[in-house]
Length: 132
Image 1 (cartoon, one colour):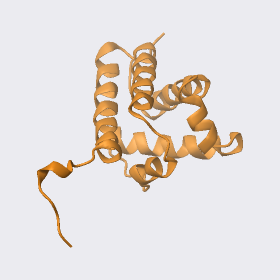
Image 2 (image 1 turned 90 degrees about the vertical axis):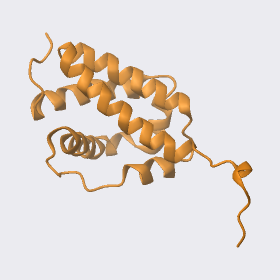
Image 3 (image 1 turned 60 degrees about the vertical axis):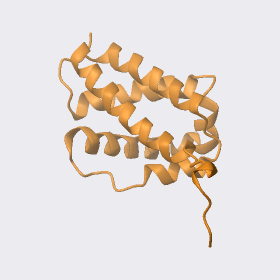
Image 4 (image 1 turned 180 degrees about the horizontal axis):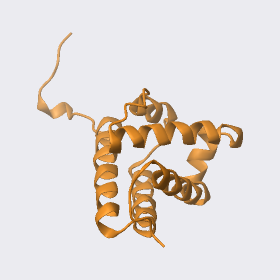
């Protein structure tokens, strides 16, 4: 039965289910496995919980740099983001009513779009030359 309310407890259950799916996924699971050892997953999940708590509930618990963490991986491609978002949406839909799942998906897409813009947008050199 889906959680009727989005709060810290239901967020934790959702994130645990979501990252279980992520870790088992054939495309993005290996990316996570290369970056996060099994022993480090509890710490990573605490960071993820703080991030989403800050995003959704404005708790201010997250103090990190998600862009810097993703840049440091060096191996991300647009298809990784698409898979992550697809799993996120499917898991949200399984855990929450449609309205709540839609709010989560919308936030995830905004965050993903921001990360993708920073990682993959390369200004074209056809817009004029720059001199030093």
